[in-house]
Image 1 (tube, rainbow, N blue to C red):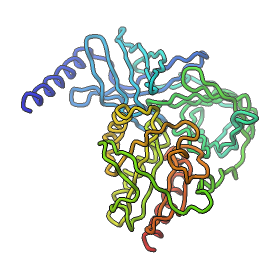
Image 2 (cartoon, rainbow, N blue to C red):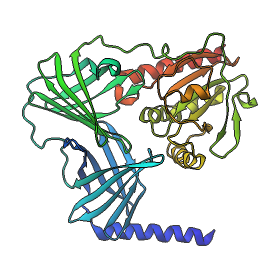
Image 3 (spheres, one colour):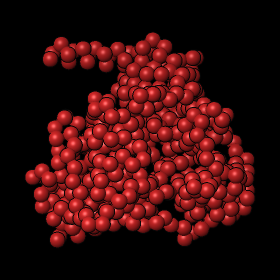
Image 4 (cartoon, rainbow, N blue to C red):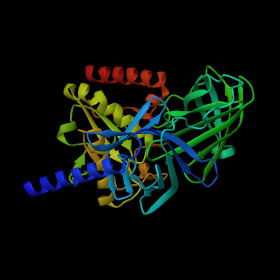
Length: 409
């Protein structure tokens, strides 16, 4: 054990020394992921020195996403993202960082070229043209067409040429978007280590957006339009997924990340309010929900008689691979409740195969709320995270009240 501890200390000193020798400029950088469309995705991050070791903080609106697993060897830097099983393999060229972002997708990898420039705090434009309109407010936004048509709610806040906001869908939101209004056009992007999105559109006037495009990853493209609608709202999240007729309960037995069987019928869940979180480590809204649960909800309600179980649907059926990504998730959020590996993937229909009493399943995350008698009382589809502002605050208040009511029964 002493030798192992000494090795860890020596490796830490080596990384710290390497970081000091390279002398990369500290401060705000502009990173650009290059996709196949030429509409390359920009985002900003802060490179800082954390007691001799490099620390990267990714900026998306008000979100600050910290990355600490950074290894330096010679003129190379390996950045392992804390979530979503992705990494950057970079090299130093003068003061620039150049290389690739690699996202591991079960049995395959997806890559995008990447370059980052120091001392650069703008996202899309260093000096954008003066905005012709202000789009602050709520919008009805429609993505796709025909069978793929999806009606969402857009929320934007514009100050001068600076723009932040998000789009809310029935299964969650696009989290913290940040960008600019330049002349009669909007540009927004986000990067969270696993997902890369760019949104563009033409601003026709104060009430209509047209020719919208959403670029995702290396080659994804969807079209959208929007009209101002301060009364825009989504369907009730508790109305979308339900049990088949004749069912009041759900049942399952899966292995946890240590390989032990866990069943909903286990004694620890008897006479408890149970929250079943259907998630995947690849799912950004699942991460927001996990942050909510571990950020105070579990600590507040577990002593009062609430149990939480996470059912994970990973991109692979390989138990060892799923175990590795979920252990990383557990460590990142300090998850105290059991995470179960279902063995099913997020393919359409798989959650219903694993939980055949579900009549419908719309997407991840889905949360099943069970009362002290073991009956399913509500099923909540999606999660509106902190990037949605008032929507998130309203959800937290509503969920706390629901929990209090069930505990009081």
